[in-house]
Image (cartoon, rainbow, N blue to C red; front, side, top):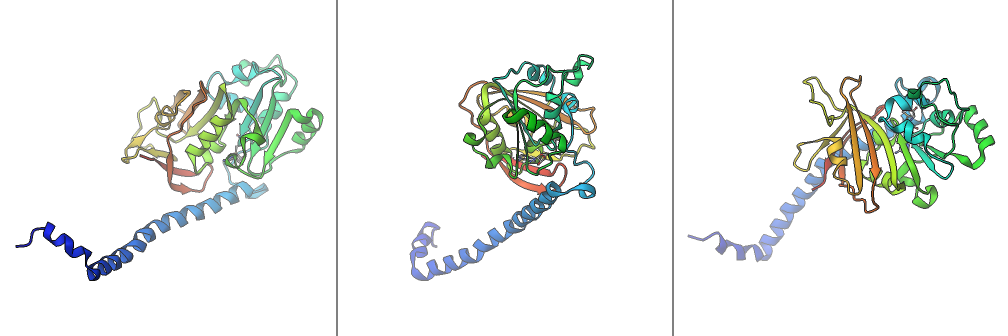
Length: 300
Ligand SMILES: C[S@@+](CC[C@H](N)C(=O)[O-])C[C@H]1O[C@@H](n2cnc3c(N)ncnc32)[C@H](O)[C@@H]1O
């Protein structure tokens, strides 16, 4: 009887090699065909997403809100946001990623209102310089008017997403905010975080929120559904906060708002040193929306 090993030399014979190559060839494209629908689906959804950004007037989908003011930011972002913003002096810079119409920055520069309650972010009238970033241009007449009077102190960047800007173009910031902006909309979460952290000064803070995720400090209810879902390399559940806590050189604070509708994670990230490394997340699923549905998997 032939042993298994004794058959191995036979694989080296020309005819067998040709037969094996033919089988591999036949199997190869089938493997990539299996991935093609997922990739072409993502591309289809990405172009639907582009239409949401480009929508105007009555075509803007309900829920795609682009004019939240500073008091909305104060209510949505983690506690401490207003306090830190109020302490930025003229040498500091604030970047708002996904600024929409830039209303929060307009409010920051409005004359101080001593009668405004603290939770409304009553500030000393805009000292730091501010950059609003939005893929699509949603500037209003009010923005153009303020920009004309403030000159270089405020800038509005539009026409591309965060990943397409270089550090040289943008410079560094003490504060970066994101209210239903790139963090909720990007199809490349790890690259997005890498870029944010490269733009942040050591000691600076990133403030954001994300809705319908596995919350850090709350049990998932039986009816929970996830708009942004992260899984680990083995396919098990990964929370957005547990992933963020794997980034080096940052201190991550998460405030889980399980009673909010929708349930939301408030996230505050402080950069504590410069050797940042972000564990990579691969996109598995993307469905256009406001915000889009996304599923990512941690790469081994
Ligand atoms: C729903 S609006 C939110 C606007 C504003 N923050 C507000 O709360 O009113 C989404 C904004 O995020 C922007 N956006 C989405 N992904 C982005 C990315 N990767 N880089 C920069 N801006 C992005 C859109 O262009 C838009 O300005």
